[in-house]
View: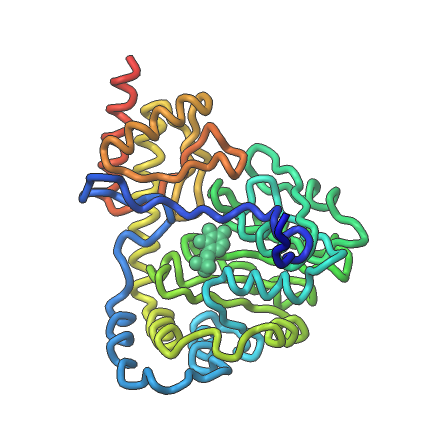
Length: 362
Ligand SMILES: *Cc1c(COP(=O)(O)O)cnc(C)c1O
């Protein structure tokens, strides 16, 4: 046997992340509803910022992200010194695992939780610990049952992906208060902008020493391709995350475009309203076709079917119609399909497909 270099223990057990599909062979009219992207694209202000930085491409970007941090702080009424920016919130999640995980540590995620928590935890050398949910909802008591002396991080998204369900502030506070002091609670607010009046957990970060919030430009800002996210936490946590962050982790383009986007509050409001109206219509229309879903607080719904076979059969009809949705078998939800809420026209196309699915079933 030939010898090859050996990665650190556990790397070969990491399951590869699989993103939503974007292509269907032989079709040019594909409707991609598999990655929770904004159907309206990116705001014009962001596109204008993109073309403005073209003359600066030979310069290194600022390493302290000062402009973007101050813009985020102003808009959300936060302390700019306690914000960290990353290449997507994925990178912030990775910083958290690098700084607080590692060999000997346990990182808790929930049964249907976002797959990057487990991937980043294992990449750091930590053990990823999965705890149950109850009826597709994060359950505080199940998390607390999973806590040991070794627990260093607890990840949960609120609203959650792929279920779309949400925990109220009192449950989140109860969890933060009940965790041991050495464990950090990470509230992933990737979809926070889709919830009226929701701060993503910022107030809890302010009130405690063991809570961090992560946010992204990939969802309501329509900038998934740009790769910008950020985190907000206690000063001691942000200090540690900055130690593992590469100084030039964000480019001039990323910083300038994201800064223009976060200042465009009209855009966020408009996308929020469109999403709320279309989501309501979509979930009601699917329910009328015998496809229920839990009330969603995000920009997608998770459609439930009788069993895996029925979910796959509906997915096959979607594909015939050029509609790509997300199978969530790897999230332990084989009987469900996650469908991004698109524009009104997109939602009509989804409902037409499901109607056709019910007809071919007869
Ligand atoms: C989409 C998503 C993110 C965002 O990831 P980025 O790296 O910022 O693009 C984070 N958490 C959850 C739960 C998501 O669904």
